[in-house]
Amino acid sequence: MRLTVYLCLMCLTATMPAAAHDLDAKFLIKREGKVIGYHHVDVHETAFGTVVFTEIEMRVRLGPVPLFKYDHDSREVWREGEIITIDSDTNNNGEKTYLRAQREDGVLQIDGSGYQGPAPAEAMPSSYWDKSMIAANTIISTLTGEIIDVSVEHVGETLAPHFVKAEQYRVTGTVTLDIWYDGQQMVGSQIIIDGEELTYVLVSNDRQYAALADFMD
Image (cartoon, rainbow, N blue to C red; front, side):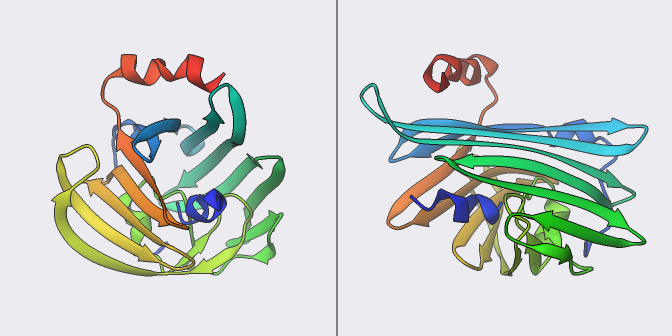
């Protein structure tokens, strides 16, 4: 299952929103209509800048037998619309990858399992938690540090996976990823990999989200 490719695809605009907490988002991840995990984005304004925590967990089982396990944790620090640091660790069904990035003398230096060296000046992280990031045609995989060229199409206002109208964008690179935004906030995404569809559905009911705890253990 090439879920890593999808999550890789998840600084032309330097304006960050004033109310960063409005960008917090919780998603259920669905495959074949069944929930297999969650994606949580937590945005904070601090004295050091805007800090963004992303947590992703997925489990695929056949009855009680685990077939696939995925865990990803990342921390981004932004200051005045510029990415300052990225730290992430990923366990993709036993394959571990990482990214450490630090801005030095105006250049984001990448130390990742997929690339080491300077990032292009226009590159954005692949986390896509803020709409301003969708403008970039070069992204940095938040799993491995790999530099990926993409093209972006504005599809227009359509129904997002949670059945509310939002602005849809299509990102085409290694795979094709559809992302929906309500204002600056990401509110859904969808992709088909090897014939399998993965869908991010925005959660507004914390009880529904909390019910995942037993499933993910």
